[in-house]
Structures are given as C-alpha cells and as structure tokens.
Image 1 (cartoon, helix red, strand yellow):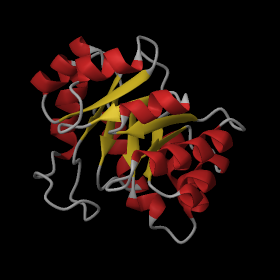
Image 2 (tube, rainbow, N blue to C red; image 1 turned 90 degrees about the vertical axis):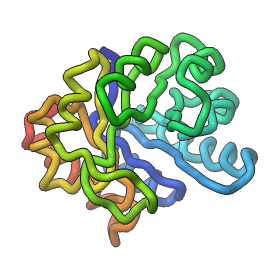
Image 3 (cartoon, rainbow, N blue to C red; image 1 turned 120 degrees about the horizontal axis):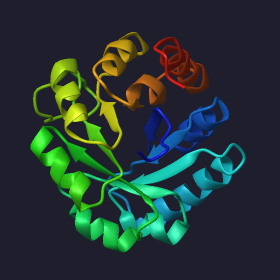
Image 4 (tube, rainbow, N blue to C red; image 1 turned 135 degrees about the vertical axis):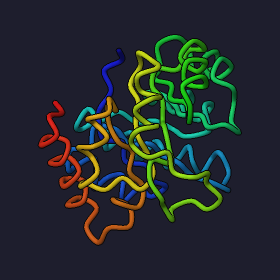
Length: 203
C-alpha cells in the first residue's frame, strides 16, 4: 500500500492550501476548473514551495501534464479526464496517481490500470459540486474499500464528526473541500479534521 496521508485538502486557492499545509495537512490536491494550464502551473509551483517546508504531498487534479511539469508528487484523474492507464504513462511509474470510483468493479479496474489510491464518493450529500450522483453512504464506500488493496479516500460531505464511521468501514482517509476551504479559519478547520482522524485511531 502506498504511504499516503489520511487528510486530503482539495482547493483552488493558494491561501487555503498554504494555511492547511502549515496546520499539518499531509496532502493537498490542487483542483482548478476553467482556467489556462499556465495559471494552474503557477499556482501549483507556489503550493509546492510551501509544501517543501513540511514534506506535504502535492497532487494536481485533472491536469496530469501540469503535475509532471511542476515536479509535484502526482495527480488525480476523474471520469472525464485521461484514463488511468494513459495517466500512468504520462506520470511515470513512481508518481502518486489517484482515480475516482463509485463501485467495486471500477475500483478494481483502476487499481489494475495503475492507480495508487482511489477517491470514492460522494460519500454524503454535499453542495460543493452540482449534478453529483446520489451519495454512497459509509456502507457502499466501505464495499469499494474492501474490493481493492490500495487506499480509499472518501470525499464529499465529510465532516469531522463523520470521520470515525468512514474509517470503521475500511476507508484510509478523507478528502475535504468546503469543510476547510469555506471555513473562516482554514488552519483551525484542518486541525479539527486531523484531531478527528487521531481520535479514530489514524496514525
């Protein structure tokens, strides 16, 4: 199993990424929609510089080429992005590669194609993204986690209070968007999730 942090902070804002990293977030996923690659490239380079001070992992969502160009740790691809096998060829054999899955069959296919972890969701109802399918809930997220040997990161609607029930069904960690990015104090919100993970027995 790849050594992957249990808290993934997903954001398109440098201020949020920086605050989360300084508060101890082990993984930041830079996810930016609707802008030029050069804009994302510049943002990722700034985030990488902050992450270098703590050893945090930096991933780029959707844009595998930007991940390679900036020299960060890896990328995450969704259903409408490069297929996992193609993303793995671009990224190379050593980079972290996440892929999105909602069912055990897809999860196994992604693992076989070279994914090193899976983002599974929406775990709960969320207003962060519109047009998402129905929430899976902990039981169905757990079924995906049991189908593979790579880490599963639950996403969407995850609050600190819900962390324990997700870890109980076999989830490795959680990815958070609004719970940290929309908080008045992103650093304090990050610390709240880290404490919840610690209480749930995460290392």
